[in-house]
Length: 496
Ligand SMILES: Cc1ncc(COP(=O)(O)O)c(C=O)c1O
Image 1 (cartoon, rainbow, N blue to C red):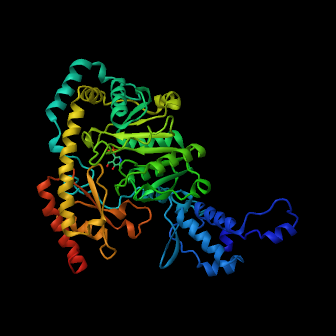
Image 2 (image 1 turned 180 degrees about the vertical axis):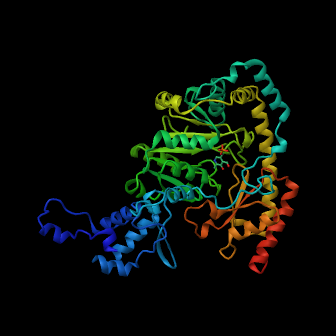
Image 3 (image 1 turned 135 degrees about the vertical axis):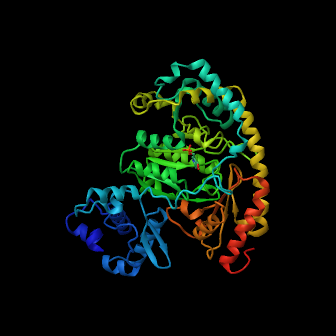
């Protein structure tokens, strides 16, 4: 190990060797930094088993306690994972950590394979119209007549001009309509000049990476968290660090700000994806304050906060204090329909003007008729009415799902439900979520394995993410009955 991380500078020898006045860092800090550097540079690749604390202590000439504390720290911030078999390097996504630093010449095909491997899905895409699919809205309840009229209206009024290139940041009418809607319904502090229209939230995430980071910068993601955010960070060659999530949302270890200062932090505060927790106000304020101090940007993904089911609406993180360092990302994939492929990012007022100049080169506009139709749909109140109807429908479906789950599984293991279109069910360790999800798919049910959303799968990330958006209430109890009997077969007993 000493060949990989190098020897530590002993305090006594250092002062004796003429370095007086330049006291070396404490051994524990040195050890942490050496291990981190080796991991980030790929000298300790993902999956490598680190020596036991006793062995490493003997090799490095430090106390065992120093190594134990260093390992604990590295585990808390996500560089390593510890389990019964020992301490292993986590699957970080910096290019070097993936081993691309190796000097042996790689073929272009191998380099390509390594690059695309980081985007590999956990499983092939299942039919997302199947019952229990998370993230699909009730497509059969979409007001097609009203949408058709809005499209015809924009064709009548905007053709042939709208066949040409549009403004790269989107149709001004839509940017204004979104800003007005967000101010009122989500408490976002913005006007239309800050809104950039994108091809869904995914392009908004990609843009945040392009505008605010350089390759190699550190980005934090919630773990478990949204795979689209990880994909965007990989695309920008960022070093992605997992941040744990609990019932109050993203839980940043206090030291992480100092030891792994991030450029971007992805969070879904209204309804953490996929565990469903709501980010507490104390953590919201702390995140904003710390991000300001560290020069980091928070990406707030408000993907389904419009569908609030309990209590008062939870206002956005962006609007909590003036000039918060927040890039507010939204999408019409849940509120309208996914194929519309319209999303947006609200940039902070102070930088929106500068960004617009860069965006003129990066974006080309387009989908102008749909954008104009959507602007009218929002302004005419049709969008608000649709949201109201969907909120009522999803509330009813969620209740049916909750009742069905409660009848078969441990109620305290049902997570989320304040917003949105899915609930998460934690499973006991003897029931593998991947196996159960695969067996469910064979029965034409499509819940997703919770561990598939985790960079570091662990006991708390064994579960199922169960959608109710597109599944009629009366189909939920029978579907959960099938799931419970599959779980029962796997456990060899009833799982109550
Ligand atoms: C957490 C999260 N964010 C955003 C989105 C929407 O992405 P897009 O607008 O690219 O369809 C989804 C959709 O599944 C999601 O789950």
